[in-house]
Image (cartoon, rainbow, N blue to C red; front, top):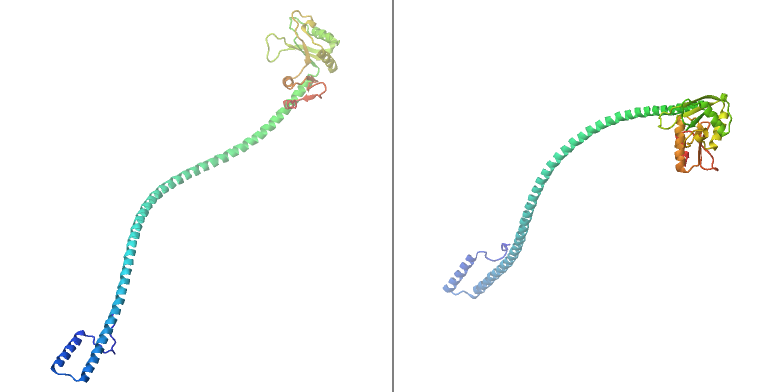
Length: 331
């Protein structure tokens, strides 16, 4: 910066005035010769002026130096500003590019947002549809649950009825079998015209070693099976007077292997069997026992007084089979 000269100094700020004063001094010197005192005063004045000028010049130089330094600093600052401005321009360019990318991204996001809204709307419709279906399913489930409860109730009643039915059938079978306690069943005796079944029974009893009288037989007749088999004679059912007599004939017959030859029938001998007269249910149960006993290697299967028994060997205990559930005992 430029500073004004000190007001107390003897310097003359206007250089043209100083030059004019020097010329006047020279003119005066040419006109007349000054005295020594005036010359010395003038010299001192000139020295002061020169000193003032020198000081002023030095001060101006210092101020110029400061100004130059300030200018250099200012120039350096301007260069820094220019550099920063360039950096700022670069940053602005980058920001513009990023802004452009952001706008594109926003546009893409807007598009995706629209698509997402569409999908959400579709999903909401689907969810509502599923919810409606779920409501229908719930109603159906409630209806089915009620029906299941009713079915379970009916099933319980049906199970109870089945249980009662089994019990009744078992009791009927026992009653039916009880009615047959005096009966014998003779299988394999050929049928003849005008045959005398009482004579055949008397001949069979003699063959097994049991003598019977005509009065020991209450009833005797042939019975047709439900399913008639071609070539097989009908079964003879004999009702004896006492169970003891029936049991004796049955016990002795099981020790023998009777054939048609023992009854004086001609032709090839065929086996004749004397069995207890079992009910249809007991016959089926006895048949299943024999089949299962053969698979499980049981040696003995028999019936006594209408009850069925099975035994694995001579030393094993006998098992009574009263129903098909008891077949599980055969292991």
